Image (tube, rainbow, N blue to C red; front, side, top):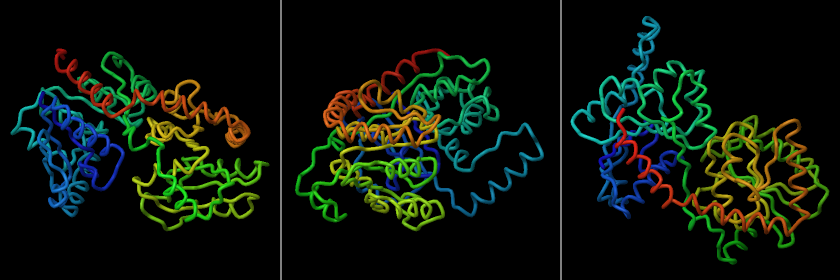
Length: 400
């Protein structure tokens, strides 16, 4: 099967600059190199060709689309002006126009658009081929402009969770048969929780954490939607001794500058009876080591997480985990694999109760960790890839 993947047009694939969606597509490429089931072409924003030396793909062609920023800006202004004049006009994208031009010269069994519903209508106007939207966020629902037209132009939509599927189905007259759930996958070996004790001790020493201190870890961006303020407030209310809250991350990926929100949460840590450590930005490759340091991992998202990779990673580590009842998180953790803190009516209190329960109950912590490692095996990268091959095969065979 010949499959074209169209990236969102922001970050490159392979994921040389990071990005969750880009990393997932790179995982598909890597699995296909092992299993040899697909002929893949990736349409991606251009990047320096020297990086391709790090990849030796035999079953994937990288098609770079070069859109100089100055020309792209002029085109965006032009399109914005036209859309104001003609209300029914579909706004076009210079990156996508170049993708379409390249697609016209090739032949594919299916075209997969990564997380960009607004790409669908221009593509459908140009192609009668099988078009599939791989939707990672809540960006296609009954509030989306031209939502029904976009939905109807897709042969199928693969969503990352039932939560996102149900949001798509809020579109009037949408057909449930066209929407399939395809959960994200994770490298279980990378997030196995098995780390050399000497490395763990070195990391503890770096942050001046004593052997008898109990570590509660938050990993993520320091923004309000991630719930770190509520976690700090809950942590400050705990009565136990020798507690450490390890806050791993910065407000914007690799940026370590503080903003107003970061200053606010750091001020909350000034009055704590416990120890709070802010690590700043940490490379994703170091995250498994921080899991190994931890007694509890907390993912207290306030916004509706579509399908959080951080939840997958925490469960895979075998460390007892607390998540909020946001978006797709409850369906990822299932039953008896993590504690779920409800955001209503009092999120801070519910986080406090969950933390208190796990701190007191060593047996429960161990049980949740063991259960989580077993549960997450069904979300391996191998399974993730096989699920895609199965879905795409059935889609190609199905008549529109």
